[in-house]
Image (cartoon, rainbow, N blue to C red; front, side, top):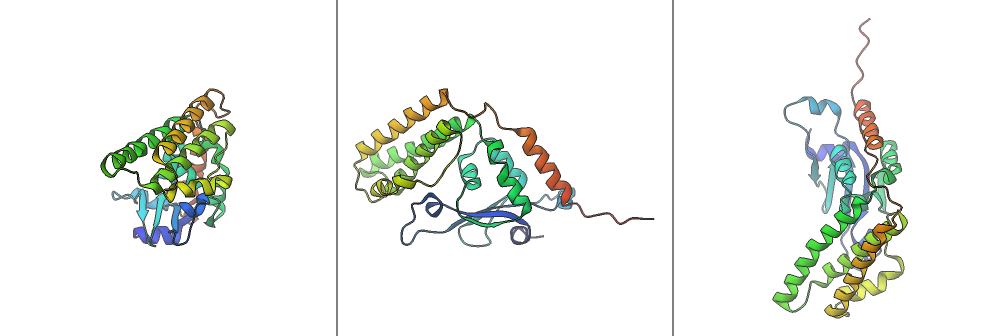
Length: 232
């Protein structure tokens, strides 16, 4: 079975991500599709295992195998957690709906570390752009502000919301370069400080619910094993 066939025939959940999911789409915005597929269990009985992720078959399409997706979500990987919370669902079957029902099981205080670490990496890239060109890549600055806002609000409420809502126009002004870099830096620093303070009182648990997620994965694997004919 080819990687493309795995995605076409065994996807359990797919959604739109990027600006269209964040409420930041403008004319010409790409449509980024992310998905999760369940590789049939017998494929794991071979020496050559099924891929943990697949790029394609469509443009701007990327999918994870269910186990890899769960591993990353349990680590509170920002991109994967946001995929679980996209408001723009393209396809979901019964197994996918059960995956979505586990959103809360993946979340934990570890999100502070993973979101902030990712944000730090993006901030260094922006700083390098400013040193080299005199200004950052404004679109990247906009998305970093969005990420930091999402992190702060997650820690405050215990729920991840990725649509920017009322912040849309303010963020788009950053994308258009209408906000000075010092103002953007100040905004980023404030969001970082607010996220740090929110960690002290967050309702999120210290660790995700590994047992609940593992139970789901085991049942999914068992369900994809072909029935053995009765030999009687």
